[in-house]
Image (cartoon, rainbow, N blue to C red; front, side, top):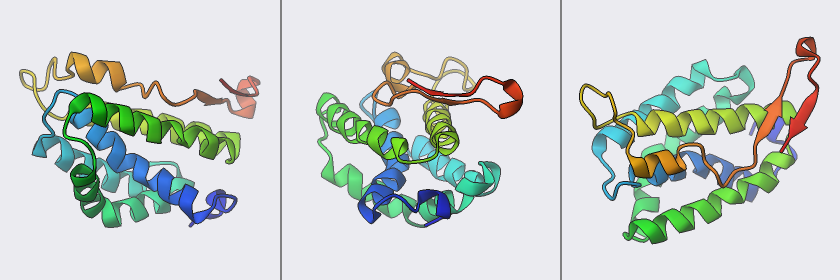
Amino acid sequence: MDLIFNNLSKEEYALLKDAIPQITILIAGADGKISPDETAWAEKVTGIRTYSSAEEHQDFYREVGETFQTRLDQLISELPEDVGARTSRISETLSGLNAILHKLELKNAAQLYNELRSFAGHVARSSGGFLKFWSVSAEEKKLIDLPMLEKFEWKDEEDKGGLTNT
């Protein structure tokens, strides 16, 4: 566990890592079918983030990637098959991230919040549509911004905007 996550318990850190496969299931399964294209792309994006995310988050994504497929399969087997029930359960679990993100420095919480929302967008756009145009379904659009999460914002000192979270 990286220093930026030191004030989290092992359980909280595990929930944070689980957010990636949970978001994959939430978005990929929003239309009722979790496609291999979506899960494969989610795994690839997780791998890409081991070198493209904020430097202090790269080890986090490396850890997530090490167990991504196993954890994804496990969660799929444990969660309800009914889309509404599954969406509700995942949304409730992801809303628990709010308290965890509040324990991090605001800069890191805001970066992770933005990375999670970006990840959801990547999963949503990974399949369907004509040549990937119009590939985000109406069901995915309702969830893509992860409405169960509080908004965390951080502005660089140079922006003179200060720190906020809403």
